[in-house]
Image (cartoon, rainbow, N blue to C red; front, side):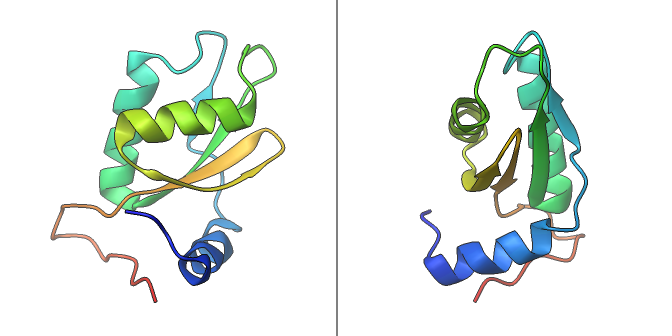
Length: 99
């Protein structure tokens, strides 16, 4: 599911006030990080992540790898932080309505 420019702008605005939930450290994009990201995406749909200084990956590389493993979309990458979006399959949460 490719996001349109308008949808990306909407998601960037929503993500601006979020704090990073997922922290990628020395071990990079490990199975634990992927599992934690899956759970957060199902619960929140929009997740901000941070790449720590000890990680050997650039933020763009980590974002692309994590997005591919979780079947999500990279919304933006700024500095050491990036944001991922994936529509949740849960019915008990309030979903983000994309325009």
